Image (cartoon, rainbow, N blue to C red; front, side, top):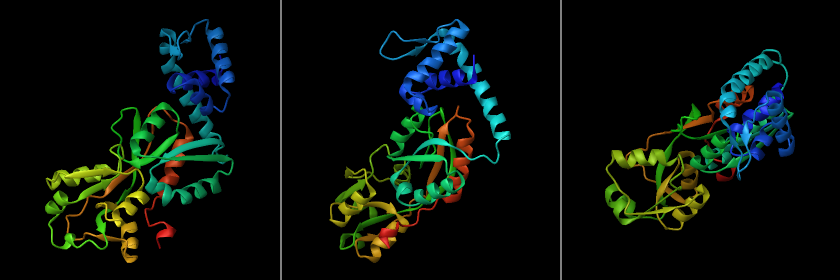
Length: 299
């Protein structure tokens, strides 16, 4: 029994499938399967039932899992103690919402690669709910989303806030004569899809102000939302720094008279069982890099 065999077993047992597990340990699926078979031979126990469409843990596999995790955790601690000056390497796959991807992600990636040039960074931009599922399945190492997560399998560490403001078409005249309650009844609200963590701030605001949208339209892109609002399709909430820049260009108008939206907390999330030094290092860089100022193209 070797540490590499236990590593292959652990990720195969906790990821959505063997292909994802193989990516986590930088092996081909066949090499991963070979290591697991070698471990089964050395233990003289069958750890996975491969008779179905998807391999599932046997009772022996379930029994081995806590011990394997503990040994891998101790190995990571020893590795960290003896390699403080050695940079990270391999592939780091992470996810961010569109706001982060369009603002501070380049700074984050550049800062990481300046310290760890051998580490390959791969990013996916999506809504928070979809990204949480991917990190839970082992497809991503970590994510940065509006949080915190409600999933017990994930850890959420606060790293910053985003301030939203209400906006409408720049030429809209009803906003100056209607109250927020009247406006909600007369106009269409345009927001990100329900799975977006950014909607948490909206939900709190609606509850506090006892408002229910008369009509609601979903769009999965902030750029798309800006275009829809500018085209008189409806109104919505928008990142403050972006909204102010678009107001200068007479694209959107900020509704300053409305009650303010509570700042939205953003968190760095990872799997609770993932104790690799990579996670702590990426969290440190995320906290130092986060900023939601308007993208260069908005200025």
